[in-house]
Image 1 (cartoon, rainbow, N blue to C red):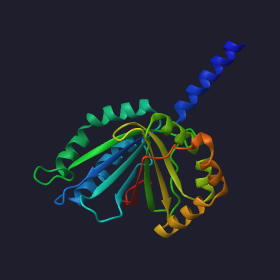
Image 2: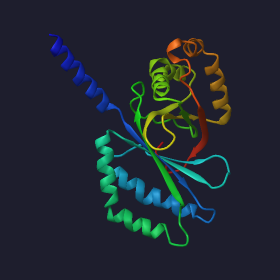
Image 3: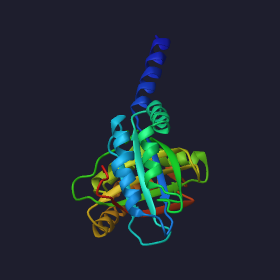
Length: 245
């Protein structure tokens, strides 16, 4: 009986893991001389349609709200599984239409971007799939929490799964995705994306979060003490017109 129970629990855990999405988050850095128009056209007319044909939906394309240099654009790509990610990467690398589009838009002497960084995430148990923002929620906040150890990172993810995500919902922080980084720089860390109507709504809702009784209780629980964070990075973003988020 114990053996049957163990096997059943193991299979259920595999199934749950399989249901969680994976995310690729790319950050593109543009030259001052880069053609933003070419950059946008490549993703709108070539890259995103190619991914859509492969079954990838809800692709987010954002630019930083600030006017800092160099300009940065962010591409969020959700995958239903890690196997799907691997298959898409392989297909994209040999896609003749994309290769041709890259040659057309990314001209020598006038490149549409300098370089891009990419990171891979697995979704949290408590938020296994991306949530498309409601209409009018076009102001985004991308937050990354870096931890000082794997244990601290694990406990912070647990904190989200075991109640913090629900508090986000209570105060309407507009959760879009939560991901634990499995490949990329500055690990261990987690990243999540929130959506709002405006900066003013964002500030008001975060104020509500800070005084929420469940948050005050959770942050003082022994299991979560010293779980966050050695560094918090915050970036405000706006969705491009052809973004699917």
